[in-house]
Every structure is written in structure tokens, then in C-alpha cells.
Length: 266
Image 1 (tube, rainbow, N blue to C red):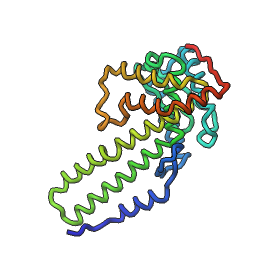
Image 2: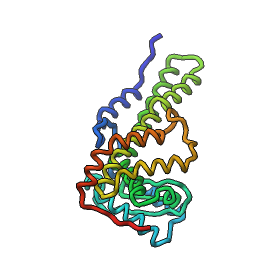
Image 3: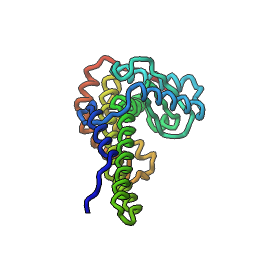
Image 4: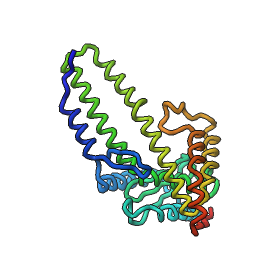
């Protein structure tokens, strides 16, 4: 049986070819959205979070986080963002942080109990800023756009060829996309952000060796309840630690070469 191809598949292929880019680590990317679009979406999301979540009013805590974030963002290329980064501490127990296009950084107070010093917090903030530098948000949205177009095209092909019981086939395609494409893609982003973040913290004057201690703390805080790596958007903690150690030599060289030595006190 011959299947009929649709315009959606051709459009998806054309979009992918026309939006090729290269990440800071040399990986090929497809980026369909403009910097201005991403910055606008980042600003809107950040504004919404400040309305929904409680913002910390503790001056010492806020100054501590801003001190580390300012040291990290000073190393960000102007081509990524050349303005003043907005840093907000959210009074929330989540062990998390994030950075958004357009110069936005959020840190949850729950993270401050796991990241035990300025170097460890710098590892987290560097990692999150690494996502922005590598345009991972753009890449994920672009990937979702292309997958949706491809899935729609597959559905049209099955319908056009009157394939019986196409529902289970489409469900299998969805699972295959998630496990075979989206999850490894997310793990690639996390590993790449770890590598970029390691460079950022070292050049900022934070000890990159503390990134390993951070992930040991993260694993202890999770109680070993991390999901199986195959079905996780993030690499397993030990995988991250091994990768960080593999990239440690150049990071240490950057750390030893810089005169930057932040002294951020909590």
C-alpha cells in the first residue's frame, strides 16, 4: 500500500532547513522564533510569576542572590542580552531556579538550603543562564512546532489512505516522539547547559569544583527518588557529576586565570 504525503510534512521540512543554527557547543539546532519574540514571551512569563508567587523581601537574601547572578551575567555575550538582568528571589520551598530570554532570573528560596555556598548557587544560576545562551527555549518550541506538524501530517496520511484503527497508531507515534525524540532532546539541553554553566561560573570567579558538590547535595535532597534516566527530561545525577568532572580541566584553567573573586555573603 502506497501512502500519500501531505503539504504539512513538506512545510515542516522547509521550515527546519531554513532555520538551521549552531549551539555554543557546536551542536546543530533548528530555531524558528526571533529573539524579540522570545524576549517578549520571557517578559510576560516573568511578570505573571511575580504576580502569582510571593517575592522575598529579605534584603540580605536578595543581595546575596543578586551578587552571584550579577557576577555570572557579566560573562554573558552582549549578543545574547546587553541590558540589566532582572533578578527576583521567590519565597517558595521549591529547590529550583530559572532564567528566561530577555534578561530574567528567578531563584526559589528552597534552593538556598541545598546550594550551601556562593559557588554552588553560581553553578545553578550559570546552568540556567546557559539555557538562555544556547537558546534552548527557542529550540524546544521549534521542536514542538515541527513535531505537531509532523504528527498532523501522519494523521492525514493515515486518514487519506483509510488505514483502519489509526487511533492506536497515532498514540504509538506520540509515545515514540516523547521517548525517542523529546526526552533525549531535553537531556541534551540539560547536559549542554551544565557545560556552559561550568564555564560561566569559572570565568566569573566561582570554584567550578563545587558544581560536583552541588549535585551530590541535589541527589541527597531528592532521597534517591529521581526517575529512570531513559524516561526523564534530566540526566541522572551521577551522569551529570561524571560529565562535570570530564569538563573540569578547562573550567579550572579559566578559574585560575581570572582575577574575578566574588565575595557574596548570605
